[in-house]
Image (cartoon, rainbow, N blue to C red; front, side):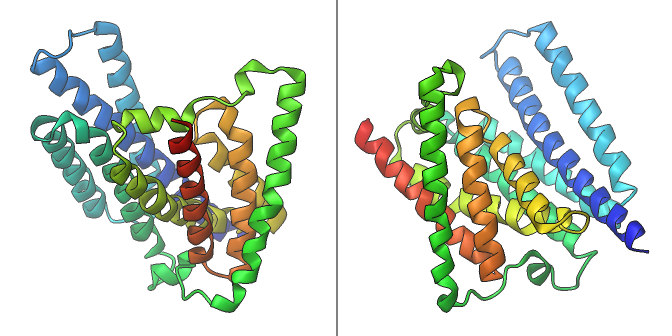
Length: 281
């Protein structure tokens, strides 16, 4: 019975990964079509072919894993229709300066919506299942685990510098994001210190971490979850530092017994990084 339950949990995890990847590719696909139809980009056959294949494979994957979950087909179809409508509105009617922020919001809010639909099949109170429960201020002492991550991050930076591994040296990852958002620090603060901590903590420390713990020990779950968290930061130089941060946030989530604890620290961390970047710029 436990084996069946674990299989069910992981089927939902694969479904979430599939529909998240599809959402990203689908939005890129809509942007490509809109830009091509409006004449802002030339039709590049190879890129168009790759996008079509990517969207098709991601859609096939989400349909396959949806059948192994209890998420209603009607909910998935409604979700996909809303994503399509919002993407078209974004790229046709919203100023180009705000396309990126709308795109990020569509993806993040879409992921949270799907997570709640999945968690409803586990528990009638999905917020409770995800760990979105009242944070006990007395447990804020466990925030100190965040500072345990910094010696490891600094040690890693020293190793990279000593070995002169160019690809792993500090990149302009944060600076690139700031510049991509036209140096609009109100929007950047909103995304970095509110949207990102909320969505990423619900996804990683709420949803993914708890599912991985159904099969593996807490220590292994922390390692896997933290590495996945590092990978989504895409930049090679950010993967290990983000993974170390992810481990600290996972421990805080366990010790405080609430995802709100890791959300608070994640938000403060991003605020600190944003302040450093603005000073550097």
